[in-house]
Image 1: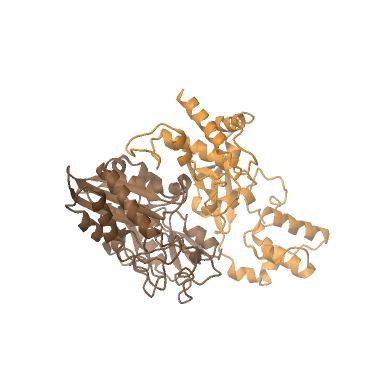
Image 2: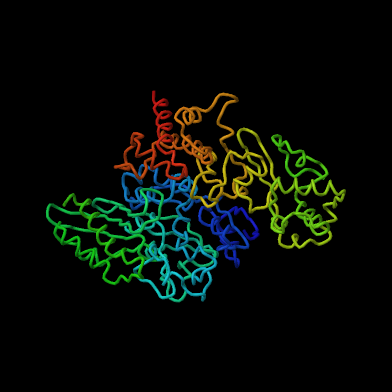
Amino acid sequence: MKPFRYERARDVAAACASAAEPAAKFIAGGTNLVDLMKLQIETPAQLVDINALPLGGIEETAEQGLRIGALVTNSAAAADMRVRRRYPLLAQAILAGASGQLRNKATTGGNLLQRTRCPYFYDTTKPCNKRAPGSGCAALAGLNRMNAVLDVSDNCIAAHPSDMAVAMTALDARVETVSRDGSTRTIPVDALYRAPGDTPHIETVLEPGELIRAVVLPPPPPGRQIYRKVRDRASYAFALVSVAAIVAHDENRVQDARIAFGGLSYKPWRSADAERTLAGGALTRASYDAAGVAALANARGYGHNDFKIPLARRTLRATLAEATGTI
Amino acid sequence: MPAVFDDPWCACGTCRDPGLDLRFTASVGRAVNEGLATAMTQNSNERLHLTRRTVLEVGTAAAALSVIAHPQSARAAGSPDAATRADLATVGLRVNGHSHTLTLDPRTTLLDALREHLALTGPKKGCDQGQCGACTVIVNGQRINSCLALAVMHDGDDVTTIEGLARSDDLHPMQAAFVRHDGLQCGYCTPGQICSAVAMLAEHKAGWASYATADVAEVPALSHAEIAERMSGNICRCSAYANIVAAIRDVAQGERA
């Protein structure tokens, strides 16, 4: 690990000012950052520890949603009865990720900002445009079975690893941030991430020193919420494909559906195409399959990850069948 | 010059030697190494976080050859370490009921602080990247991977390791259950398994759900599937899982009774 200066931030303004310095980074749970620092993939000159800041707690919002502080641990969010009763999708997604020990440390803000687990991002002997801009992408022709198939670039096919963020995207969650100048803004989770394009090392729209303060969940939409994760092991593995679905239906038709995929893109993939296809559609396998075809129409496999495209369609079908109690 | 840490558990004698400030042993090591071409590797010489073993090696080599570089003169000589060394941090930890004040390179993980500075070698270094769970300790009542925690971020925290679970000769019920059910083979993962299991039962008692819970709004009974899911952060390479789960169920049922 490279040497760094360690600073325990006393207030939000000081934290943002410190983290705006070149090569400075916020640290909260550290479950991803410390690992990357050991491997010298991350080499911050300064760590700004934000754990003493008042960014904890889960509170009700005026619109009858919930506001989850950035420092709320994944465990605490998944254990909260309001989350479990009103946003079971989110609790399921959080519990689908990592292990008990990691969830006790990992935070809401940090989970959103975790880095990809692309094996070539981790292998410092190989080219990676995300780790070493301009060096190339070893995943394109490499062992890419965990990599992305939607909105990929020839510079990077890394997938975002979070489960939590997939559920939040389906729930239309918004990120509240505060910047160095004290200004705040609200960013939909869906708009937090930047497509890889020519700059896959720039992953979010956050500015230097901009701190995630909380995640705001709007009131839960009507319908059954399900998070289904497909992975290599029964537990404690990243998603090959996951589906977050919120489906409202009557006896014959889907009234409203929200669909987001994990494991397929640089961000949690909200599929407006699948949602449009489903709305008003019958509760049939053909209808669910049509939604899957729509969702994956622009997908592109790179060899080892070709299987993700049919797997995503089938996972969507199974999730919709479970959500509607059909098939 | 005061010793850097006051460790009542330490038996080595070196770390409580008032004449030796561990902060400067990197420089001492360099002086010994450069002057005498000892067997110390370049690698260990460059480690800014020194293990007790390294300190002992340095001490032994220096004593055997009657060359003891004064720490401050070594530093004044402009060791290259001085330019790259991160500022040291003072960290207070309460570990298994004992308070310690450590002076640490900020890069020191909680695991290394426990093992290398406090001689608590129960928490194991397995993968060192948060995947195997061998390093699991209980911090402020919650299980965490100590390998992914920077010690400096746990200033003031209360840590329980496997060494702190038993009451003198009376094993913790989870330890006794692991013995009774033969919940181990090689034993390397066992301290982490037991610390994890103890904290996991507390999580369940607090009503936490898991990914194995059919309805996350409910508090499920601790079935085999629930235990397996909740313990998935602890890998057992010998695959003693069947007996580990049996041991945990035994304790869980005992607590209910």
